[in-house]
Amino acid sequence: MKTVVQIWCLAVLLAVTASAQAINPRMPFRIQADLARFRGPDDSTVNLELYYAVSQAALSYRQDSAGYSAGIHLTVQLYGSDSVVFMDRWMVPSTITDTATLSRGMNLVGAFPVVIRRGDYILKIMARDRFNTARRDSLQLRLPIRPVVTGKTMLSDLEFASLIRQSQNHTSFYKNTLEVIPNIGGVYSEQQPCFYYAEAYNLLAGKDTGSYVVKAAIYDAIGREILTRERPRRRIAESTVLIDQFPLQAMHSGTYQMVLSVLDSSKKTLTSSSRKFYVLNTSLGVDSALLAGSSSPPLAIYASMDETDLDEEFRQVRYETNDEERAQFGKLSGAEAKRKFMSAFWRKRSTGLRDEYMARVQYSNQNFATMGRKGYRSDRGRVYITYGRPDDIERHPSESDRRPYEIWSYNSIQGGVIFVFVQRNATGDYELVHSTHRNELHDENWQRYVSPQ
Image: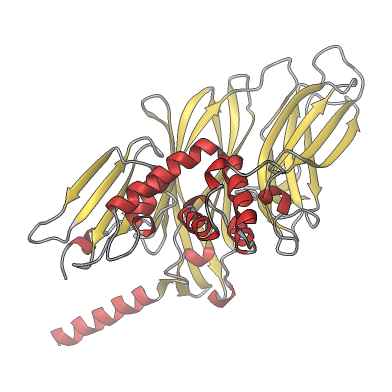
């Protein structure tokens, strides 16, 4: 009878475990966050709105009477100079009827408001999967708080949104009779209009009683003005809400900046607020003018490089490139076109950055090469090239009961992060198995890779 009970308990345990699985276990559990600051209830405070999102496809779901349930446990901490000044924890539930309908683009999105006094803070956000505590992530942001100055026209932060509409439903996205669904990260496709929300304060300050103008301008990555819209307004209220939307069908893929300004009756700028956003336009692709550069001659370093050398350098700078740049380079043919591309690539960033980057590539090739594989292609090489020399390396090259491993520490990144590399195969390379960096592989149970099976 005891054996039967044991088997039944094991079966129940296995059934519960199986019923709470991530839809895509290989998909990283990552939290995205954004924020906007608005005028507070008094002259010394600010209303902070924190926005967060986690991909629903990365969550672990458990089947129940409502369909499939999941969720994230969130912890928000706000640090002052030497202590925690605010902390809150809560669970965000998610229920769906069919897991087959989930896609990478579907996010569990929320907003959290808090009133904060003037100061310089560190904001830390921690998230973990409701049904799988091993799946977790965190991020850290510097947060300066400066209240609105009395008697001076000022703008709040710009908030990008995926939708703004009139509403009477007082959800977490409700403010000033509007439902404002945040676009966390400010990434839009060509089918989406770019919505923005902002608030203007102290509009009646000063002697100017004439109309003012709200100006919204969009600039591309090289500073060209793509679109401008000016709308005159009468000075009626001390403060007002500014909302609008822009179509994106005619914009190429790339990075853009929106600048929202309030001008007085003589068109003098009283205040402005700006923010970057991103367009992924599959129809138009990247504007060739942004990547091909101007008519400037190629950098001298590329004058003696043939096409093979240029191709190899582009492979080496893989950690600095984005999808659009890789697609653009792949369409080029001939050394001259690639010389111009690589020159524009580094001018866009900094020609001095190339020297530092290539020095890191050389170091990686000299120190991390394994079995004919160049060092820059290894996990340690990638981390070294991306983040530079670590502040400390804890090496464990040969211990009788453990596989060789290293722990790299970076003290100045995100308040301090580590990278753990393990030589999982006797003749293989050191592989990254865990990091506390919010954009890297995270596995709290990495020690299992160190102990031989």
